[in-house]
Length: 344
Ligand code: PEP
Ligand code: MN
Image 1 (cartoon, rainbow, N blue to C red):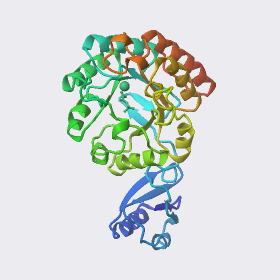
Image 2: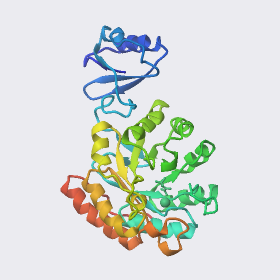
Image 3: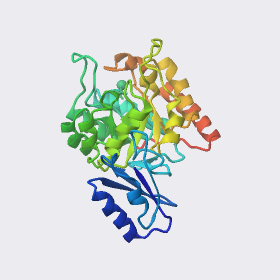
Image 4: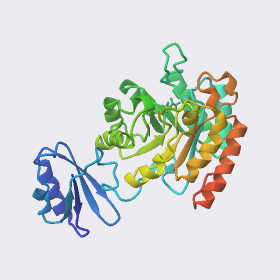
Protein backbone atom coordinates (compact mmCIF):
# COMPACT_ATOMS: atom_id res chain seq x y z
CA UNK A 1 0.00 0.00 0.00
CA UNK A 2 1.21 3.52 -0.78
CA UNK A 3 0.00 6.64 1.04
CA UNK A 4 0.44 9.92 -0.83
CA UNK A 5 0.36 12.92 1.50
CA UNK A 6 -0.89 16.43 0.81
CA UNK A 7 1.84 18.83 -0.38
CA UNK A 8 1.28 20.99 2.73
CA UNK A 9 1.04 18.11 5.22
CA UNK A 10 2.49 18.89 8.67
CA UNK A 11 5.04 16.79 10.56
CA UNK A 12 2.50 16.03 13.27
CA UNK A 13 0.01 14.78 10.66
CA UNK A 14 2.72 12.55 9.19
CA UNK A 15 3.41 11.19 12.67
CA UNK A 16 -0.29 10.44 13.18
CA UNK A 17 -0.58 8.60 9.87
CA UNK A 18 2.60 6.67 10.65
CA UNK A 19 1.28 5.70 14.08
CA UNK A 20 -2.04 4.58 12.59
CA UNK A 21 -0.25 2.33 10.11
CA UNK A 22 2.04 0.89 12.79
CA UNK A 23 -0.97 -0.01 14.92
CA UNK A 24 -1.70 -2.67 12.31
CA UNK A 25 1.74 -4.20 12.80
CA UNK A 26 2.98 -2.67 9.52
CA UNK A 27 6.17 -0.74 8.81
CA UNK A 28 6.38 2.68 7.20
CA UNK A 29 9.07 3.82 4.77
CA UNK A 30 9.07 7.53 4.13
CA UNK A 31 10.10 9.13 0.86
CA UNK A 32 10.47 12.92 0.86
CA UNK A 33 10.20 14.07 -2.73
CA UNK A 34 10.56 17.60 -4.06
CA UNK A 35 6.79 18.08 -4.28
CA UNK A 36 5.34 15.32 -2.16
CA UNK A 37 5.98 13.04 0.76
CA UNK A 38 5.00 9.43 0.22
CA UNK A 39 4.70 6.66 2.80
CA UNK A 40 5.36 3.12 1.64
CA UNK A 41 3.53 0.60 3.81
CA UNK A 42 5.44 -2.62 4.18
CA UNK A 43 4.09 -5.80 5.72
CA UNK A 44 1.04 -8.00 5.33
CA UNK A 45 -1.47 -5.26 4.50
CA UNK A 46 -3.76 -7.36 2.33
CA UNK A 47 -6.67 -7.56 4.78
CA UNK A 48 -6.57 -3.88 5.69
CA UNK A 49 -8.96 -1.42 4.06
CA UNK A 50 -7.02 1.54 2.55
CA UNK A 51 -9.97 3.78 3.48
CA UNK A 52 -8.83 3.60 7.12
CA UNK A 53 -5.89 5.79 6.20
CA UNK A 54 -7.46 7.78 3.35
CA UNK A 55 -9.64 9.77 5.77
CA UNK A 56 -6.79 10.86 8.07
CA UNK A 57 -5.82 14.56 7.93
CA UNK A 58 -2.97 15.25 5.52
CA UNK A 59 -3.60 12.19 3.34
CA UNK A 60 -4.27 12.85 -0.33
CA UNK A 61 -4.52 9.34 -1.73
CA UNK A 62 -4.05 5.72 -0.71
CA UNK A 63 -3.69 2.92 -3.18
CA UNK A 64 -2.73 -0.70 -3.24
CA UNK A 65 0.28 -1.71 -5.28
CA UNK A 66 -0.31 -4.62 -7.59
CA UNK A 67 3.38 -5.31 -8.25
CA UNK A 68 5.47 -7.56 -5.99
CA UNK A 69 7.84 -4.63 -5.36
CA UNK A 70 6.94 -1.38 -3.61
CA UNK A 71 9.93 0.58 -2.33
CA UNK A 72 11.83 0.25 -5.62
CA UNK A 73 8.84 1.53 -7.57
CA UNK A 74 8.35 4.98 -9.09
CA UNK A 75 5.03 5.15 -7.26
CA UNK A 76 6.92 5.24 -4.00
CA UNK A 77 9.55 7.72 -5.17
CA UNK A 78 9.16 9.87 -8.27
CA UNK A 79 12.62 11.41 -8.40
CA UNK A 80 15.55 9.29 -9.56
CA UNK A 81 17.72 8.00 -6.73
CA UNK A 82 21.37 9.06 -6.88
CA UNK A 83 23.82 6.66 -5.28
CA UNK A 84 27.19 7.90 -4.09
CA UNK A 85 30.07 5.42 -4.23
CA UNK A 86 33.22 6.87 -2.70
CA UNK A 87 33.35 10.23 -4.48
CA UNK A 88 31.35 9.15 -7.52
CA UNK A 89 27.63 9.71 -8.01
CA UNK A 90 25.67 7.17 -10.04
CA UNK A 91 22.37 8.21 -11.62
CA UNK A 92 23.65 11.69 -12.43
CA UNK A 93 24.36 13.02 -15.92
CA UNK A 94 27.69 11.17 -15.65
CA UNK A 95 27.77 7.65 -17.07
CA UNK A 96 30.16 5.85 -14.70
CA UNK A 97 32.54 3.13 -15.86
CA UNK A 98 33.33 0.30 -13.46
CA UNK A 99 36.21 -1.77 -14.79
CA UNK A 100 38.86 -4.28 -13.85
CA UNK A 101 39.53 -7.98 -13.98
CA UNK A 102 36.96 -10.65 -13.15
CA UNK A 103 39.08 -11.73 -10.18
CA UNK A 104 41.91 -10.18 -8.18
CA UNK A 105 44.85 -12.43 -9.10
CA UNK A 106 47.92 -10.54 -7.86
CA UNK A 107 48.80 -6.99 -6.87
CA UNK A 108 50.96 -6.58 -9.95
CA UNK A 109 48.27 -7.64 -12.41
CA UNK A 110 45.58 -5.60 -10.69
CA UNK A 111 47.83 -2.55 -10.64
CA UNK A 112 48.32 -2.79 -14.39
CA UNK A 113 44.58 -3.03 -14.98
CA UNK A 114 43.80 -0.22 -12.53
CA UNK A 115 46.29 2.14 -14.13
CA UNK A 116 44.85 1.42 -17.56
CA UNK A 117 41.20 1.82 -16.61
CA UNK A 118 41.83 4.98 -14.57
CA UNK A 119 43.66 6.53 -17.52
CA UNK A 120 40.80 5.61 -19.85
CA UNK A 121 38.11 7.21 -17.66
CA UNK A 122 36.83 4.51 -15.30
CA UNK A 123 35.94 5.74 -11.81
CA UNK A 124 35.48 2.44 -9.98
CA UNK A 125 37.83 -0.55 -9.90
CA UNK A 126 36.21 -3.98 -9.87
CA UNK A 127 37.66 -7.41 -9.12
CA UNK A 128 36.38 -10.40 -7.22
CA UNK A 129 38.17 -11.63 -4.10
CA UNK A 130 35.39 -14.12 -3.38
CA UNK A 131 34.35 -15.69 -6.69
CA UNK A 132 31.09 -17.55 -7.37
CA UNK A 133 32.42 -20.24 -9.73
CA UNK A 134 30.27 -22.83 -11.45
CA UNK A 135 32.75 -25.58 -10.55
CA UNK A 136 34.23 -25.96 -7.05
CA UNK A 137 37.54 -26.90 -8.71
CA UNK A 138 37.91 -23.52 -10.46
CA UNK A 139 39.84 -20.58 -8.94
CA UNK A 140 37.73 -19.32 -6.04
CA UNK A 141 39.52 -15.99 -5.53
CA UNK A 142 42.20 -14.82 -3.10
CA UNK A 143 39.72 -14.10 -0.31
CA UNK A 144 40.66 -11.54 2.33
CA UNK A 145 44.20 -10.85 1.02
CA UNK A 146 42.54 -10.04 -2.32
CA UNK A 147 40.41 -7.38 -0.62
CA UNK A 148 43.48 -5.68 0.84
CA UNK A 149 45.15 -5.68 -2.60
CA UNK A 150 42.02 -4.19 -4.16
CA UNK A 151 41.88 -1.36 -1.63
CA UNK A 152 45.58 -0.52 -1.91
CA UNK A 153 45.59 -0.54 -5.69
CA UNK A 154 42.35 1.47 -6.02
CA UNK A 155 43.63 4.11 -3.60
CA UNK A 156 46.89 4.37 -5.52
CA UNK A 157 45.00 5.19 -8.73
CA UNK A 158 42.20 7.35 -7.29
CA UNK A 159 39.47 4.78 -7.89
CA UNK A 160 36.61 3.50 -5.74
CA UNK A 161 36.26 -0.27 -5.12
CA UNK A 162 33.47 -2.61 -6.22
CA UNK A 163 33.67 -6.27 -5.22
CA UNK A 164 31.36 -9.21 -4.66
CA UNK A 165 30.00 -10.52 -1.36
CA UNK A 166 29.00 -14.16 -1.56
CA UNK A 167 27.77 -14.81 1.95
CA UNK A 168 26.47 -13.07 5.06
CA UNK A 169 29.62 -13.86 7.04
CA UNK A 170 31.78 -12.02 4.46
CA UNK A 171 29.85 -8.74 4.66
CA UNK A 172 31.87 -7.17 7.47
CA UNK A 173 35.28 -7.77 5.95
CA UNK A 174 34.18 -6.82 2.43
CA UNK A 175 32.49 -3.63 3.69
CA UNK A 176 35.73 -2.73 5.49
CA UNK A 177 37.58 -2.71 2.15
CA UNK A 178 35.04 -1.83 -0.56
CA UNK A 179 32.91 1.18 -1.48
CA UNK A 180 30.31 -0.80 -3.43
CA UNK A 181 29.22 -4.33 -2.51
CA UNK A 182 28.23 -6.51 -5.45
CA UNK A 183 25.52 -9.16 -5.23
CA UNK A 184 26.14 -11.61 -8.04
CA UNK A 185 23.51 -12.94 -10.40
CA UNK A 186 23.46 -16.30 -8.60
CA UNK A 187 22.68 -14.58 -5.30
CA UNK A 188 19.98 -12.19 -6.49
CA UNK A 189 17.36 -14.13 -4.56
CA UNK A 190 19.53 -15.00 -1.55
CA UNK A 191 17.12 -13.22 0.76
CA UNK A 192 19.10 -13.54 4.03
CA UNK A 193 22.13 -12.05 2.21
CA UNK A 194 20.03 -9.17 0.85
CA UNK A 195 18.48 -8.43 4.24
CA UNK A 196 21.91 -8.41 5.89
CA UNK A 197 23.30 -6.15 3.14
CA UNK A 198 20.39 -3.82 3.79
CA UNK A 199 22.02 -3.14 7.16
CA UNK A 200 25.65 -3.04 5.93
CA UNK A 201 25.90 0.74 5.51
CA UNK A 202 27.44 0.50 2.04
CA UNK A 203 25.88 0.91 -1.42
CA UNK A 204 24.96 -2.34 -3.16
CA UNK A 205 25.22 -3.32 -6.83
CA UNK A 206 22.42 -5.83 -7.40
CA UNK A 207 22.96 -7.94 -10.48
CA UNK A 208 19.94 -9.39 -12.24
CA UNK A 209 19.53 -13.14 -11.73
CA UNK A 210 20.19 -15.50 -14.61
CA UNK A 211 16.49 -16.27 -14.99
CA UNK A 212 14.90 -13.38 -13.13
CA UNK A 213 12.08 -11.25 -14.46
CA UNK A 214 12.35 -7.50 -14.01
CA UNK A 215 9.63 -7.69 -11.34
CA UNK A 216 11.58 -10.34 -9.39
CA UNK A 217 14.72 -8.21 -9.68
CA UNK A 218 12.95 -5.13 -8.30
CA UNK A 219 11.41 -7.24 -5.52
CA UNK A 220 14.95 -8.37 -4.62
CA UNK A 221 15.93 -4.67 -4.47
CA UNK A 222 13.03 -4.19 -2.04
CA UNK A 223 14.74 -6.55 0.43
CA UNK A 224 17.69 -4.14 0.54
CA UNK A 225 15.52 -1.04 0.70
CA UNK A 226 13.16 -2.48 3.33
CA UNK A 227 16.14 -3.37 5.52
CA UNK A 228 17.16 0.28 5.48
CA UNK A 229 19.65 0.64 2.63
CA UNK A 230 18.48 3.25 0.10
CA UNK A 231 21.69 3.01 -1.96
CA UNK A 232 20.90 0.31 -4.49
CA UNK A 233 22.20 0.19 -8.07
CA UNK A 234 20.69 -2.36 -10.46
CA UNK A 235 22.92 -4.14 -12.99
CA UNK A 236 21.65 -5.89 -16.11
CA UNK A 237 24.16 -8.66 -16.96
CA UNK A 238 22.31 -10.87 -19.40
CA UNK A 239 19.73 -13.58 -18.89
CA UNK A 240 19.46 -17.21 -19.97
CA UNK A 241 17.60 -17.73 -23.23
CA UNK A 242 17.66 -20.42 -25.96
CA UNK A 243 20.47 -18.50 -27.70
CA UNK A 244 23.90 -20.11 -27.47
CA UNK A 245 25.96 -17.79 -29.71
CA UNK A 246 26.44 -15.50 -26.72
CA UNK A 247 27.02 -16.56 -23.09
CA UNK A 248 23.79 -14.85 -22.04
CA UNK A 249 21.30 -12.60 -23.80
CA UNK A 250 21.96 -9.01 -22.74
CA UNK A 251 18.49 -7.59 -22.13
CA UNK A 252 19.05 -3.96 -23.04
CA UNK A 253 15.30 -3.39 -23.07
CA UNK A 254 15.49 -3.80 -19.29
CA UNK A 255 17.14 -0.37 -19.05
CA UNK A 256 14.24 1.81 -20.27
CA UNK A 257 11.73 -0.53 -18.62
CA UNK A 258 13.45 -0.29 -15.23
CA UNK A 259 13.79 3.48 -15.61
CA UNK A 260 10.03 3.68 -16.09
CA UNK A 261 9.14 1.28 -13.26
CA UNK A 262 11.79 2.25 -10.72
CA UNK A 263 13.65 5.25 -9.33
CA UNK A 264 16.87 3.24 -8.88
CA UNK A 265 19.90 3.77 -11.14
CA UNK A 266 20.61 0.98 -13.59
CA UNK A 267 23.92 0.00 -15.15
CA UNK A 268 24.82 -2.61 -17.77
CA UNK A 269 27.49 -5.34 -17.74
CA UNK A 270 28.13 -6.30 -21.38
CA UNK A 271 31.05 -8.57 -20.40
CA UNK A 272 28.96 -11.27 -18.70
CA UNK A 273 26.14 -10.56 -21.15
CA UNK A 274 28.26 -11.44 -24.18
CA UNK A 275 30.89 -13.79 -22.76
CA UNK A 276 33.13 -12.89 -25.70
CA UNK A 277 35.22 -9.74 -25.93
CA UNK A 278 34.35 -9.30 -29.62
CA UNK A 279 30.81 -8.21 -28.74
CA UNK A 280 31.59 -6.13 -25.66
CA UNK A 281 32.45 -2.74 -27.29
CA UNK A 282 29.25 -2.64 -29.38
CA UNK A 283 27.10 -3.66 -26.41
CA UNK A 284 28.77 -1.06 -24.20
CA UNK A 285 27.92 1.62 -26.79
CA UNK A 286 24.35 0.34 -26.96
CA UNK A 287 24.12 0.42 -23.15
CA UNK A 288 25.03 4.11 -23.11
CA UNK A 289 22.63 4.81 -25.99
CA UNK A 290 19.73 3.08 -24.22
CA UNK A 291 20.19 5.20 -21.10
CA UNK A 292 22.32 3.17 -18.68
CA UNK A 293 23.77 5.15 -15.76
CA UNK A 294 26.97 3.14 -15.88
CA UNK A 295 28.81 0.35 -17.65
CA UNK A 296 30.69 -2.51 -15.98
CA UNK A 297 33.44 -4.03 -18.11
CA UNK A 298 36.00 -6.74 -17.37
CA UNK A 299 39.52 -5.64 -18.31
CA UNK A 300 42.74 -7.66 -17.98
CA UNK A 301 46.27 -6.67 -19.02
CA UNK A 302 46.75 -10.18 -20.40
CA UNK A 303 43.35 -11.85 -20.89
CA UNK A 304 44.95 -15.07 -22.16
CA UNK A 305 46.35 -15.84 -18.71
CA UNK A 306 43.31 -14.65 -16.71
CA UNK A 307 42.17 -17.14 -14.07
CA UNK A 308 38.53 -16.37 -14.80
CA UNK A 309 36.51 -14.84 -17.64
CA UNK A 310 39.57 -14.15 -19.85
CA UNK A 311 37.65 -14.66 -23.13
CA UNK A 312 35.26 -11.81 -22.30
CA UNK A 313 37.86 -9.45 -20.84
CA UNK A 314 38.99 -6.46 -22.90
CA UNK A 315 42.62 -5.48 -23.20
CA UNK A 316 43.49 -2.01 -21.85
CA UNK A 317 43.65 -0.68 -25.44
CA UNK A 318 40.24 -2.08 -26.32
CA UNK A 319 38.80 -0.64 -23.13
CA UNK A 320 40.19 2.84 -23.81
CA UNK A 321 38.82 2.79 -27.37
CA UNK A 322 35.42 1.64 -26.08
CA UNK A 323 35.20 4.42 -23.48
CA UNK A 324 36.16 7.01 -26.11
CA UNK A 325 33.42 5.89 -28.45
CA UNK A 326 30.89 5.73 -25.61
CA UNK A 327 31.81 9.31 -24.72
CA UNK A 328 30.60 10.50 -28.13
CA UNK A 329 27.26 8.76 -27.60
CA UNK A 330 26.95 10.07 -24.04
CA UNK A 331 27.53 13.64 -25.15
CA UNK A 332 24.89 13.33 -27.88
CA UNK A 333 22.45 12.44 -25.08
CA UNK A 334 23.49 15.28 -22.78
CA UNK A 335 25.50 12.99 -20.50
CA UNK A 336 29.18 12.85 -19.67
CA UNK A 337 31.90 10.25 -19.16
CA UNK A 338 34.89 11.20 -17.05
CA UNK A 339 38.16 11.84 -18.81
CA UNK A 340 40.86 9.63 -17.44
CA UNK A 341 43.21 10.52 -14.62
CA UNK A 342 45.63 8.12 -13.06
CA UNK A 343 46.48 9.45 -9.62
CA UNK A 344 49.43 7.06 -9.23
C1 PEP B 1 31.34 -11.04 -11.97
O1 PEP B 1 30.99 -9.84 -11.95
O2 PEP B 1 32.52 -11.41 -12.16
C2 PEP B 1 30.29 -12.08 -11.85
C3 PEP B 1 30.55 -13.28 -11.37
O3 PEP B 1 29.12 -11.66 -12.32
P1 PEP B 1 27.67 -12.37 -12.41
O4 PEP B 1 27.21 -12.55 -11.00
O5 PEP B 1 26.86 -11.38 -13.18
O6 PEP B 1 27.85 -13.67 -13.14
MN1 MN C 1 33.47 -12.36 -14.27
